[in-house]
Image (tube, rainbow, N blue to C red):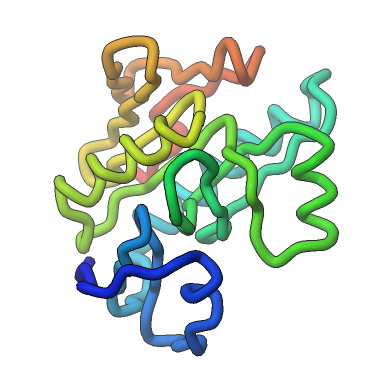
Length: 189
């Protein structure tokens, strides 16, 4: 992802003309752009399987007002300066998010969970930066899914990162009470 020297506000970012060939994010007021490429089948499959597992949990959970978004859910992250990102899979909870989904073109609340599925264009630096930005915004859990190595890494602000491999179960406690899924079921193998 290239970093533009230009600093801008979220409003200036939103006023940029749409370009179907460029994916843009605004991280702490810095424009980030990359050429849009099609997602490889491993990435797309992992997105789908994670979203399906989370949606299955949502339909049986007793937690009200849960929204599961996929496909680069546009989100303005609070407490991070001018930051607007696209989240691969996000879990948002609360009546405010439900209102925003119905009326707005972007969400302005932090998700409880942000999932990023690694792509061939991701760099270590860009992933590390996104984890830090998510946690600073109040995201309780950040999952980094690696479809090549079949690992999910879980980041939280209150503990050391943990990795879950094919032989393990991924849980969402305490924020996603009752969510659990075998990691092996999240990857095409």
